[in-house]
Length: 104
Image (tube, rainbow, N blue to C red; front, side, top):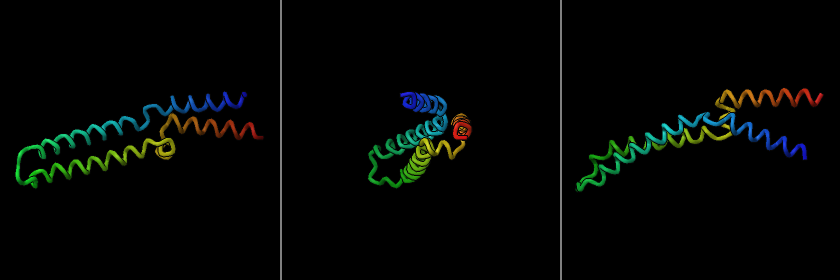
């Protein structure tokens, strides 16, 4: 029963510690992607027989979409460890140190 509370406590601490890590970059990438999508959609909605004038907007939107998808991948739990999210890194180091001390 005590181990169950320890696991819950560790999960809660990790959740609090990683709050905000990588989130601002993802939010900015999403905002950029949505903005370029809106501009591209508005261009397409104009009654033109030829939509080649929207090609530049399409390329910008596709580029922003790719950047958003890549940024979204970075905010996974394991990617935060790889990225070196400082609060998470400190917790992992402290946990590993504690684990090493208790196993001896």
